[in-house]
Image (spheres, rainbow, N blue to C red):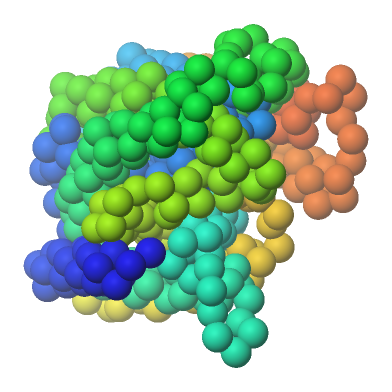
Length: 482
């Protein structure tokens, strides 16, 4: 990278932080901070969902999938399209009805409405821990990008990846602490637009031109391994694992509930989710995977997830490199700050405010949120150093949340017979199983992900104990969500 690229990168980052400061000065209540005052436009919310869901982590991960398996890697984000549109049709109409009545701010607020305080508290703990892991994955994604581009050569024998982890974490946590959801959403819109323009209209054409100079675009056919140009170069069990792990997150994702509550009404929320689905698949899915395939042709011996950042660094013209890397970096920040806000929201709104400090005022809650975000950011840095690949970190965090929370949430929406006891035991059993299986690296039967069995265990426990211990009767108002 040239001095011009570094200058562009620095100016870009300063502009993003300035937007965060601008909105920070206008956040007066916890509602402003966590749900954007409930008046954010659909297109901003939709693009923010994509930036948060795909972000830099899946962007870098998609390049790795394109490198290792080719076009079949696009199925990963097909799950995002399915999840977004199912949520728009089945979930948003229900949640917006009760949000209109109760003014909710978090995902556990919904479970509290249906099951009571104990279930909501356990859900907040599971969600908070899951988003902590997700944040660690995003920090690692940013570090991989930075270590391959910005900090590839450092003095004094400093390790590029380690240095990048701490640098990325410092910038991300600073931005998150000062900004609220409105700042996140509006910067997401700009960042995602720049990223897509940089990839679709600059990076891809320049990459194709580079292939032409090296021997022609036909190298994509002659230099890629067999199966890379097939959509079926994927084991069925891997596709099932992606579906089981990722689609349910659209039902339980704290970051998604915050954006549902940020929309003015049901129509705006559904429009936002349709926009998000289309941008995930086919637009981002094919863009990321295709660049990963090109990176394999140009740098066949590179590490899978490092090949695309290297491609961006070495073939883009001076000035353009800085813009594309800055936009990637910002996409990573967009996901990380959303996840940090989700985790701090669980801690502050669902745990401290509800159970430890119910008399806290709005200003105190604002400051408490900033402190919680800072501490969670520090923990995320420690997690980032323990994962070997970006996708592992992200999918593990997903699996942990999905196994414990998916079935009870599904029951809250669609089964009037579901009970608080059934929900609580299902959360504990499903989440605990996946946590043990993942941390001890148990080999699952049939090659299925641990979350598949975690969900199955959670479902059995949920149904059995809901029938054995029915709990309180569902009120007429609560039955509206059915």
